Amino acid sequence: MLEFIDAIDLVRGKISSQNIPCIIAGDVNIDVTKCRINNYINDLLIYNFLLNVVLPTRIREKSAMLIDHICRNEMPSLQLLV
Image 1 (cartoon, rainbow, N blue to C red):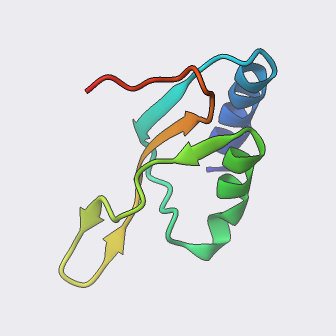
Image 2: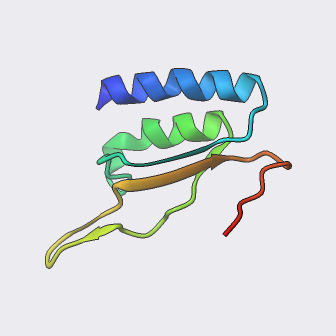
């Protein structure tokens, strides 16, 4: 997990420094409902990325996890087409 976070951190830093609108999406398998991954969320916020999925994406009988991520940087020119 730490290798992924370090790798994505480098990419987010480059995107942020160049003011490039960006969406990052994937089945990341990092459960953001767990307290121990707060550094991941903090890193997103440092580079102006917001996690757009806030409800669990895998729901089981006795557990729920938010492991599928869609993040976008907060850029005024970024428009999502649906």
